[in-house]
Amino acid sequence: MVVYRNKHKKLYNISNNFHGGGDNLKIGLIDVDGHNFPNLPLMKISAFHKSLGDDVEWFFPLNRYDRVYVSKVFDFTPDYEMCIQADEIIKGGTGYGLENKLPYEIENIYPDYELYGIKNVAYGFLTRGCPRNCPFCIVSKKEGRYSYQVASLRQFWNGQKEIKLLDPNLLACPDKIELLDQLIESKAYIDFTQGLDIRLMTDEVIDKIKQLKLKMLHFAWDTNEQSDLIIQNLKYFKKQTDINMRKTRVYVLVNYNTEFEFDLYRIYKLKELDYV
Image 1 (cartoon, rainbow, N blue to C red):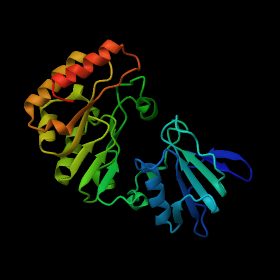
Image 2 (tube, rainbow, N blue to C red):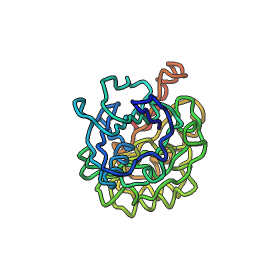
Image 3 (cartoon, rainbow, N blue to C red):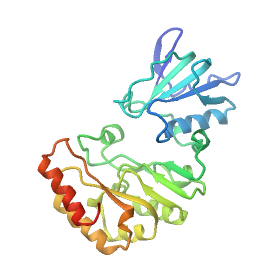
Image 4 (cartoon, rainbow, N blue to C red):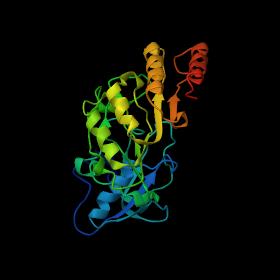
């Protein structure tokens, strides 16, 4: 994240500049990508400032603020171009670059779900990073080419009925069994929104998945690399579980670096395997 000071047009790192002390701040938040999916960093920033007694609200163009946070996840999303009246404007998110990160005390705070009116769903990461380094994905570049635990479930879940996990590759994490046990013990419905790496599926993992209350389970088949292993493990997973296939989906990336024939082959093969 970087901070823009309107008065002097100065650019600097904000890791030690989230609160200037003194009177409570008036904070404005801008979700550049829109509100179709909650912005987790903004929920954490909101929780942090509220814990300091600051006034936090969604940005309103006619209001003036001590500080406005602008968050953008996707680099193809048009930037926010309306006038912002604020002493400081802080921009962050992968839409602005891969280097900016939240300070530790904000990254690890319990999110302010009320910001989006979320009542009974929890959002968060148990792990970060991925060893795959797929050319279309920024995770390896931003978070590293290995999967590692960054939180326990209780850091973003407090009894909600549903948990939406945002992890890029949980099964590549050495602590995956312990983390799956946390999800089992929660008794919440689990949605693996970013998918589980079917190439890393084992009998031990399958046994844990069978104990989960599943909302949705996603896999992926994006390239020709290890296609035989993907097909083999998809077949084996279905054979070893009695999970309703309506709760399983397979992401298929097309029109990137594959031929049309292979795109069509994957779709028909997944239909044959009863995953679509």
